[in-house]
Length: 355
Image (cartoon, rainbow, N blue to C red; front, side):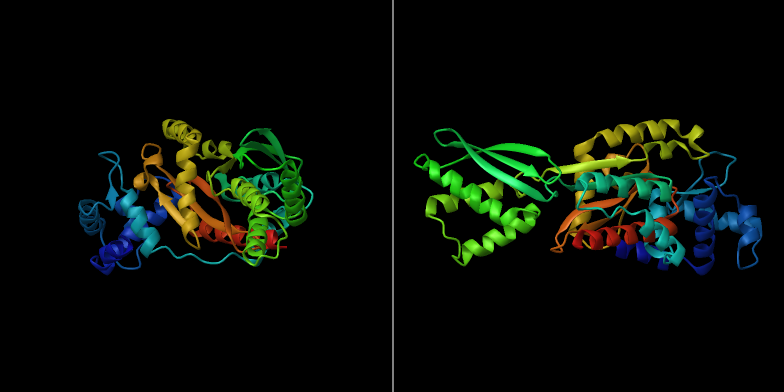
């Protein structure tokens, strides 16, 4: 897809590229349709408004711009925005002042607060900096662990009780061998507590699996199965559950043009309530490094509200991708400013989680 977009730019002559870029730049800055007279005054070449209109007509035929009203100027289409982002957008770096501002406002007290609270603060930070809604999707079992216990319920069933350092408690029922002796439950609990305390579940699982593979664990076969079942149940891989955090929704209606876009904003709020689809969309960003950009109807979730997402993954101390962080807003975003902002914030979050 990106290659086809790049080819689309190559098919345009320099004059068309300059006019197209001027339309998008002006639209992203003002939110208003752009007219030929306005463009002709700002081009690096001398062209009459009539010549500009001819080029704009060609760009419209190519599906890159559209005329929202008969007497209005042109605005970029979603296809045009994607081509602009992929081929023409010049993304700079954050200034030292901007980096310092993010660093000073980023939460850093990971040892004394629940992880979700810290991620919520980071999402709030991105919302304030971008004037959009901040979003985080992360695996639920990210908190460092305090205690795990196995409690027999019935023949072949046991309750696994997990307690996090943030005092959050969760329970799950697992299958156990019918002939499992009571001592195995205590032995499995003691073993797991000795290895998982102060670790995340992914960290604990890695340590325990390594030890079991190298046969350094002094457990009988039944207890070993119980340990493996318990840690697999809580590793987050069995059900793929994600926690969704959205902050700053009010920012989406603070825009000066919001009065003309209330229906779009209302639809966006409805989209944000479609939690599972939003989580699935953002989880796609976990499959690669760097910033991912989703524009408008490129994804079915925002086909009606015409919204964009800029998001990037972040990692834990073991360099495992454990979540995605970014912003959501209208397709008319300051992409050049927000892309490096999201990129730097997620990288900083990864460094903080490794500390």
